[in-house]
Length: 401
Image (cartoon, rainbow, N blue to C red):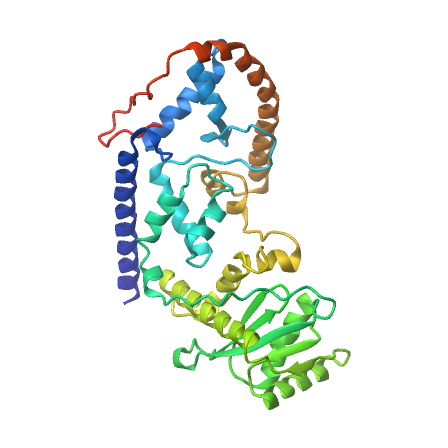
């Protein structure tokens, strides 16, 4: 039964990939020379032309346009077309061809919990030079899970002002009932929300016993610190029991309990819980898994890395003062390189090659600027050039700039 389900998921993914490639091809053909998306053939053709242009002693105006827009980097024997650096920066932006687009978009979409166009663009634009809004929208139209989930109405909730009275002093705790869809012994989800940073922590629970809830909260407090005020929509007697258990386990801890106001605070708790359940459902479908307790940690990260409208940054950044790390795939190395790395020595070699490339580019930048100025007058007097013809022999329509 499981093998049949896995096969079905694979077939759906294959179909989604094929539809995406077909639509991207049509999009590129409709834009003729103005498309930023490369075919595989055009990608490697451009890569070769950039290398040849850089090696020429005397460059033509076309050569200068190439090296002004593109560059080539080699890491672990793999050549990648990248955006030419016109100023010093830490990150490199890669160009990709259309056959690579689906996997990049799909992995990013899942990593942010089926986030929309704006969130995907923000995630991708820092690393890729030609992943556009249009291709993102094309991908999103094919995601069945995004069409199936019920959108949560936006209430325009914003973060509370950072006053002395509330800094690091308040949290919201709620229990999500999962008894209709138990995962082994787990029947509830504890949702912990830091009021100031909107940082969320999710933990599976076997029961609603005050002792178990207190133990989980104690684990949280020992990592990120304890608040002064605990808000909860749960029964007052139950929460007082939880606070009492906490004080017994940690005598130096003093927390008071408060009912959330029936307006903004309660609405925020309800909205967060709905979003958690939607993201969890999407994770279970995407991973073909009934174990929501395993998915909680991934949903937690999805929530904490997403930009919060009121904070203008992610809850993770608000809590820890830095961007979240996601291993080597989040680094400035190309995906192909990361996939073949196995040892720290290989990683150091790849990073050294990347660093050396950036140093060389800084030195080349001055030389190119000087050379280009020598022929600017000739470029201005030349007649306007027609778009460059494609030389690709692909059966598909050529994709040009």
